[in-house]
View (cartoon, one colour):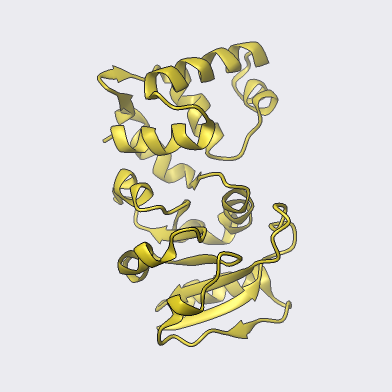
Length: 203
């Protein structure tokens, strides 16, 4: 197993945290893709043996879900981005505290945004995963409307209300109304909670 640590890519440290990216993988191709995003920055090794003990809350962990799953209870408080298959149970994964999920083929394009969002305390999910889960999103028997699903999808991509309004061709006030409805149906108080709860109720 390969475990490496780098400073996070430029622009991903918007939270003000001086953190490092810890990559956990057995996939040489995946490692190469991540290196493309972080080089030529200096990086340092973290020993593969007992690597979890070397991770701090100032780090963000990226790795294949099967390698991370058994370690998640020891990574509480550490942002974790998991590389997953399209068939993953998002509700179960988010319920274990994972902050971001990227399908393997999307790592190159989505890593930067995923890091920005999880370091800001948000949840990031690949759009490919969301498109599979959208039809099943529901809350205590109340299915989210198609427009509410679309709003929720853009939330997971880090879009602000005005950006969502522009993408959907509606007003900001309408976006806010949809968010109010989403929060009520899912019985949550903010965007991050809404995403996690929707995944738990969806299927």
